[in-house]
Amino acid sequence: MTTIYLVRHAEAEGNLYRRIHGWYNALITDNGFAQIKALEERFRDIPVDAVYASDLYRTMTTARAVYVPKGLELHTDSELREVHMGDWEDQTWGGVRHFDPQGMDRFNHSDPDWRAPNGENLDEVGRRVSGAIRRIAEQHPDQTIAIFCHGTAIRQTLANIKGIAPQDWHSLGHSENTAVNRLTYEDGQFQIVFEGDASHLDESISTLAKQAWWRKDGKTSKDVNLWFRPINWAAEEHLYLEARHDAWTDTHGSAIFFDGEGFLEGARTSLAQSPWGVTLAMSGDKVIGILQLDTQRYSQDGAGYIPFCYIIPELREQSLGVQLIGQAVSFFRPLGRDKLRLRCAPYNDRAQHFYKKYGFAKIGEEQGSRVPLDIMEKYIGYER
Image 1 (cartoon, rainbow, N blue to C red):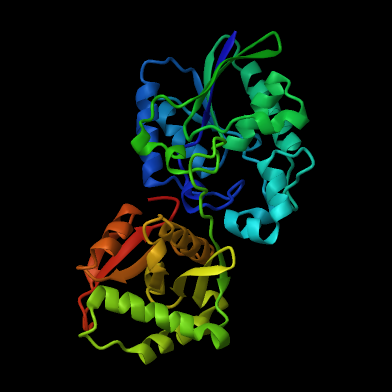
Image 2 (cartoon, rainbow, N blue to C red):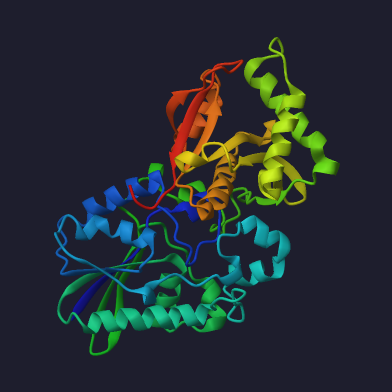
């Protein structure tokens, strides 16, 4: 009999930034690395003969919890990948909800007729991953193997093992990041010993504890998933100027001169570089934030520059700003940038705490500025 530990990857950028990542090669978050450490402790005394993962960064990184301490080789297999999300890849959940609400509803209800545009459907990913796990299990008779995979892929694999009819897929639960499923395989048959066990995580590093999308009890408010669009400068320039003024006075007070025209000129420069140079963060049809992106400054250092990152005051305590950081990552990474940079006043305690929480660290101080500014940086590359 072969024993299989089927493990979901640790928290990755898509989980944090609320973006759709199937085959998109997302990174593990800082919280995800804490989950990996807890997973390593869980497997400390569990014998494992072989370790497999999909060939995506988030599963290969999570697999280090097992194969590194045990001195094993990591085998990668593209057939273990998550469902291919086609045209939805790296879009925000809020954006797909806004532009394709029917498609989103079908996906959320595990509709057998749903298919990612130019991607896969749920049956296809279930068959693909189930077949890969069977093939791997047959290569390791009477051994113990750990396989690192993805949420929807694991969910559909378990549905196949249980023989759940497509019309009942919606009844399946959702697993936590690094949740462990234990299976056995013998005489061509799988058996489930336990599933979705994340008892190695405490609430402080749980991903699902911070989100509500998966709950069915209705006891918590819904998550706010944003979408983004370029500003219509001719009609919405005033929104940018008002946000800049609010941010300035909130940080520096009214005694220091607010150079509105200077900020407007900076925005025009960003827009000359890209229509996304000034990006509006949207919740439904409401503008709730602004993200300014500059492709030229710090480009010689391989960094993407964020001159302005803003959430309206009434929503600043709802952890929405991280989705703006995710949008910046999505914009700059395809340009070959492996870092994000921004400037933040050292006495802006709220902003300093926010940026440090999500991986920014001070690397210097701006010279010649009218106000003190720390230069802060976040690494977004795949290797370090």
